[in-house]
Amino acid sequence: MDSILIAMILALLIPIYEAWQDDDIWQKMLAFASIATKTSIMMLVISVLRDDWSIGVVAVIILCVGNAGLMLLAHLIKRINET
Amino acid sequence: MIDILSYSLMVIGIIFWFWGTLPLIGERSVLFKLHSLSVADTLGSMTIILGLLLKIPSEWSLLLLAIITLAIWNTVLGYVIAYCSIDEEIKNKKIN
Image (cartoon, rainbow over all chains, first blue to last red; front, side):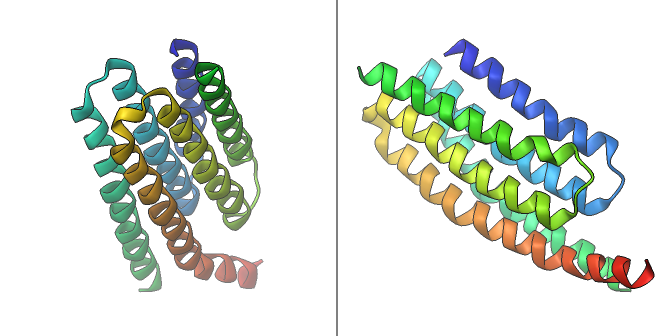
């Protein structure tokens, strides 16, 4: 299970690097959306590893609210770009 | 047997993740990256959660909620980002 977690951390580094090196706001939004999903799935894996389900509940909440927050941010950026 | 199945599901999910995330570094357009990213992220994450479900069936309700949440919210997020970023693409094309 640990090696799976390490592979997940490596998969998480790619969008972090992408968010750091790209200047276009929409590429950054893509990277953040990917980071949000990957982090919440990693939290689910850790909650299964530790059999501690408060972490699992937080991971599911991140899945809902995190993506909703990104959607609002996307609309905000769209409106700002229009003016 | 169940352990082998759950580990193989998780490895498949991670392969999906890498397959979806690697083109992110390239110089392609936002929509191309968004397509491969949202497909791979959603499917890969669902495969990983299925692997977790096989590992600990006692907490099936929470993991099922995670799968449903993932399916709905990740897809809608992909749509919203595509909808919002499309004006930018058209403007860039007009300028070039």
